[in-house]
Length: 614
Image 1 (cartoon, rainbow, N blue to C red):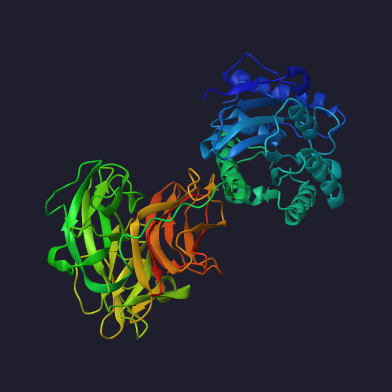
Image 2 (image 1 turned 120 degrees about the vertical axis):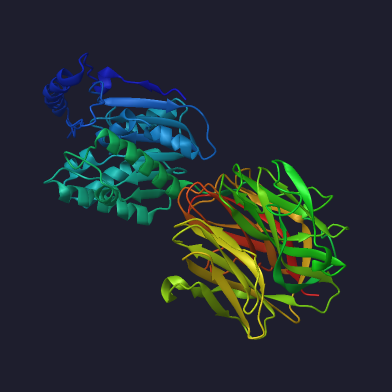
């Protein structure tokens, strides 16, 4: 999008020059001190633009710039105002407004200039004056980025009370109903104590208010390899890097979901309550080897289980894998003859991914698998659900529990995991972490052999997959890995006589923050917990698929019963990835399910059934 910009020479002091190359640099180095001397005559302390331009990219000495990006974004409008420290973020692109727009913010109104400061809105060199001017013209964004303090800290020197007053003067001008994000400052050598006092005031105010956020820019600058001739202003490349860091940190601090609608209507059961019969995992379909062969994009095919399951089954627990996809896409599954909603597996081009799901069977005892992109598809059977059976019910844990973490105990190609002695099967979540090379892991009853997989991973990433695993007679399961990788195992429930019966439903999307399905929008905030109705009040647990869509940073979502947050995870994804995982866990008395996210992300939940006492 073209950037609309304007420079008011009378107010901002823009000085342009017609030369280039060596002559340009020599002219700039001579003129800049004169420009700063003229500015010192103003009744304020001025920190000027940096004389260093090692990137040799500046076409002019610009003492101020305004950028307006009118396009609306889902995260909302933003006002950005700052002094010369921020100015470089408008001179070297992609600019800070560009980066904010890419994150989903907009419209954006940006203004930065040499000499701008906080304090009372007394004149056009104070940010408050511009806030009031814009408000009078109809612009009053609910989100405000303020990058001031280099000049103000020179005025206040080491007085924290003076710093607080100047900051709060601008906060009061901005007024209630706004989220304010204000980075800490750095200062030139010899003025570090002034920066410390200013930053202390920012931290105090952030601790006192829930509408004020600060960012430890000095720590980021010190650790990020930024080049600065005065410990304040940056090179062109440094400003590019800072614009990315600022847009990320601002989004992490401010972007949140709000309740904008109601819950989704619960889907109707596809059968009477059922109980679970765990099986030794078995590969049912591998289109790399078997009919119907590699699947074209936007097609579905039927999977028949034949003698692998008992007649009269109502649903199956399966692991679906997209193997060697030719493009990014997803797999979805449902009973043949019914509309297929939601997704089970999300994948990138050329990367094999898998995920478990529970799917109702059609009257012909089949499921249909849909692929949005060309790929091979693998279907591994874990168990079957039967009506009126004396088989096993689920007992969800009051709080999901971490039972294995090889990051503290050490890696092994085969892990023997003890299970509760009364459990004929367990519901677990498996996470592969920091693999040395791409590979897969499987969970099976110890003493059995199988060619199935539960998690496919790349080197160095964290990827989760869930499973219902039959236990051995010795009450153990074995986890095998194809490459060296750390493995984390979280126990979410056990299957034994008694317990809860499963009510299967057609896969149905209950939450999607991208379009407010489930009532939450516009995005799942960092550390935020969303509660969603996913089951009727008589349910004690739920099974479904949690998906993370394009998180800003690598992280995870924890799904739980809306009590205390357990020290476990349900799905992991890297920055900008789309990854899904099945979860079986308890719900609240009202049939509600909570999802807490560690990064800012879009979050989805597709229910496939719930668990009740009968």
